[in-house]
Length: 418
Ligand code: EPZ
Image 1 (cartoon, rainbow, N blue to C red):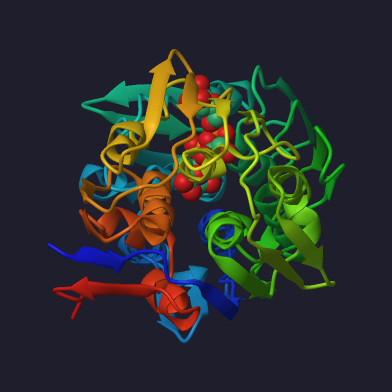
Image 2: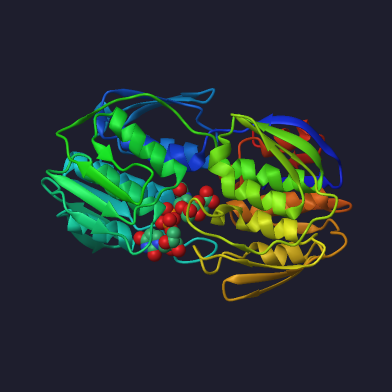
């Protein structure tokens, strides 16, 4: 099992290129299944999750090739609308094939995703939306079976602006008969890009980027190429490290996607500047405590909550971090306390009392973003940190130790992936 080691408190400097967004490319890949023909997706990060999704594409019959960030998916060979448990249980985003394959084949069998490190993570919004579009949904031995000769446009109102459910329903509705209106749709940049991609495939989606999507169903979609947007969560993770240790520049970002994040780093006392495609952060002399409440876009993202907690462990004072998107996403807290942090969790809020220093320790990753918070803490801690179960971090971060090493961090991996 790989481990990442860090000798902390190295000053960071220089710049890194931010990779393509995991949470944009995963639904884009499933959208490509709807078209007969070869779609080419560029700026695809080489991650466990993107490789898992490629495996799933191939299981359903698509022909894929992936090299140097360029992924081609030929949907014309898709012939098996089924996503097996063994694969879905490793990545919840596999559920994104439900809408596309149902729309294309009229029947699809997808394993229910299990829970994850921090909770049940239901899919009821996805299923209710498909039922409203006319699908017959049955549950059989842990598999969802959805059937519909042709989905019928309708009005769907999400009780929560679910990213995944918005993506799944938008894809399903793209070739439904008639118009679908999705109220309370997610507005995350990743879903914006998915809808833009669907339109380049011939779909007719209006209101992209707002909470109301109007989708006029079309007969078929054709293949299309796309360049994936940069990963704002990877960028925010590096900003948290830069806030503590020097001055770094992140290249290839879309600063607007980080507006709420940058605002908060400035409140902490960091100097943050941007150009059209980069952001530079200089560490704060003193980390001011800043309370945080996560929210759907354009609020502060839940996927940066763990990294923010790590930053607040070294603030000059106390702070409260509340996650309103997930109510139990704090598996990183016991691990951060092993560094000597002082954090208590009550319900969906972490109460952090800043300490003068963290001390390196052996810690364990529990999920993608919790792992990222352990790396941020390890980089700032005195002495050596050893992080186990780093397969979690490899799910969502491309060459993270190489990138941090290029900035001056003393970070390496043992038993490297061969
Ligand atoms: C996406 O997950 C992201 N994953 C997550 O990032 C991210 O944390 C999340 O959106 C919120 O921004 C991908 O894009 C692959 P949701 P998703 O549906 O779509 C509840 C990472 O680290 N809910 O917006 O699964 C749910 O339990 C990952 O990159 C239902 O109750 O998130 C949660 O409390 C982790 N029923 C809230 O809604 C449903 O049917 C938001 O979930 C669906 C969701």
